[in-house]
Image (cartoon, rainbow, N blue to C red; front, top):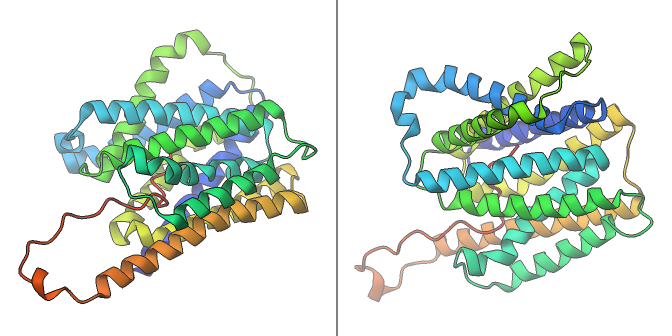
Length: 317
């Protein structure tokens, strides 16, 4: 196991938690969400172009499905705008926890959309995850109702984004990430005349706004490097460490900490995904270690199985 991949993966997710906290701060400061998203994508695309295009040239744009890249880009924009809207209404830890429902929703949809087999342990994870979600969004939790509904819609959109990413598995991850930023930049730039408002920000707030593209580019870059070094099935369990960075930033920046019942719900959501990830990793190891049947020793190897539904795809923000 390449431990550097795990370190890069966790560092990338924590960097993206910083992006989430910055987006929440700017939204509360009155910056339009569409503008935050546009700056985030535009700066990210400029940095990616400066780093990748001189090395890859036109090869960076080579894809097996341009339509698939466009669909993924649209879902990426939608999940970004929705999540920034959630962050404006819901504390950072709770918003992140609701977003972790995406892998659990993906587990529920995978048998039909990804043609993966029905597996009892996955359905147990789905039930536990939804139970945890009910604890987080329970009446009396003090969460904004619209924010909760947007959070669930964000998770569903992100699950669809993950499915779209899986279907582009034959493309270079750097190509897929570049298309995502480029499509977001072009689409939001076309809408710019209709939503542009020059915000009255301090120099520090302008710096934070520009930093969204930098933290997004670094975060996605670290994740791409992690997936290049370590299999996704090994990285999946460590994705849930992001809730620690979200809770820490929510407390340090906004003075928000979840109550005990909400913490229990977050533990259920993360525990569901973590348990499935660990079980499937052990299952994969057992399958690889099992001796080949004598009758099948000379048969051609089977095609690779699709990635398990609980594996985290690259983050959409």
